[in-house]
Amino acid sequence: MSMTGYDYNFDLAVREVGEQIVVTNNLGRTALYGEIVYLGGFIGVVMEFAGIANAATGRMAILDSSVEVSTAQVETTDTFTVGNQLYFEGGGSSAAGTLVDSATATTVPIGKITAEFGTTGAQTAVVFRPYDQANAATEAILDKAVKVARVVIDAATDYSTTGKAANIPLGSTILDVFAVSTALASGGTAQVFMGTDAVHTAIAMATDQALARMAAGVDDTKLLVTAAVTVKTHAIGDAGIVSIYYV
Image (cartoon, rainbow, N blue to C red; front, side, top):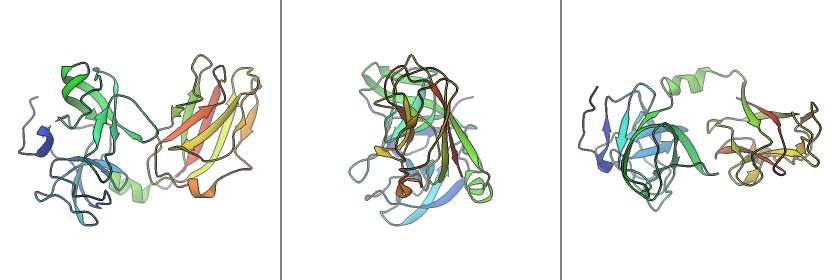
């Protein structure tokens, strides 16, 4: 099915506009019409023709899996590959955010790439299918059930520096963390981070089949999720299943 082009900024094209919510712009600058933004815990497109001034409220269309989005709001030096995950990197008060090809402590997963334009290292646009956010505003209010982010750490990968993404929505609250070791790894540990900040002190993940729990050393100011959550290990060879309980 072909997409319909709109007179938006960033050469945005979307097959149809989804659910709209009212958000407050806290970016420190005006969010432009047609700009993909991360506000109020949701990824969406600014729908106000005049944009949304800083500290003002306005309409944003939530992106979900029922639509396909094409935009030039990309990091042109990245390499976009069909089938790979796409991430949103906020631009803060100085510039619009961009879509990037890899995760960092400050990115948010946004969807899967379905097409790309330009060449490697000189991308001009990307097409993606967003992750599902349908009825997200209602679910955020009504769904208070405890959820679990299950992060599998394999021994062959070194997660000590960048960690492994837990994909916990912003605005959630972390309740507890458990780590089950799946291999013998001398000095092995697991530690949950929110952005660059540790949520708790490292817990043991060194003895095969042993269970450890977040206990002492919890930073209560980091339990409210305001940045990307990752799990970091002590070194390559650490292996286990880390379960993060949150609401």
